[in-house]
Amino acid sequence: MLLALLGLGTWQVYRLQWKERILAQIAAAEAAPAVPLGQDPAPYMKVSVTGRFRFDQAAAFGAEVRDTQTGPTMGFYQIVPLDREGASAILVNRGWLPQKREFPLNHPTGPVTVTGYVRPRETQSWFSVADDAPARQFYTLDPQAIGSALDVLGLAPFTLVAMGPSSVGAYPAPAQHLPRPPNNHLSYIITWYGLAASLLVIFSVWVRKALRS
Image 1: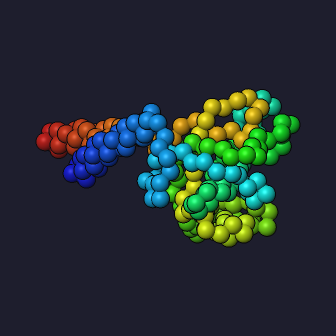
Image 2: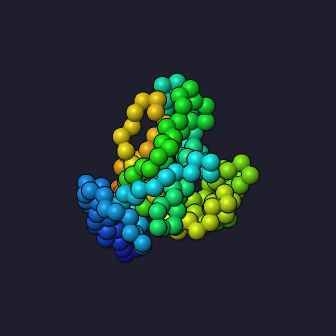
């Protein structure tokens, strides 16, 4: 048992170092300027792309409650195809917006340049919520499946998550930073090594009592 607990603690030490390297890479990518979108961008790469939105094919993705001026509000993410000249269209997650809102949406009609990060394609699992294609409500961010449901063929096999400053009452609200995975490994290290130390103390007490008897 002692060896198992020490092994788990040591494994979490390596996991902590690995996670810190990933978080450092994400922080560096976030601080760096966006680069023009290429043919095969790396996941979570910060890029920029120019095109025209097809708001007639806009859809909703996911469901999330956020605190607003009126209190906790249910909303979703607006996803819109972006037509690019000389390249395949790309699905853009423009940001969160409430289901019920008093403000008009920001829908630019001309060419726009979108800055954001590349989000890899998701695949449905047994636990995924089923998409509602007729209502254009999706819960798995699969560009091919969404494009087929929206009758938009040839979409790039990834999604661009728009980033930008947030404005009170302006929707959609774009992402403020790249996603960061949770880093709980230090607490796991303390837990496993703490259990190992507790086991040693308990064993020492048992040995002392056994010798006295």
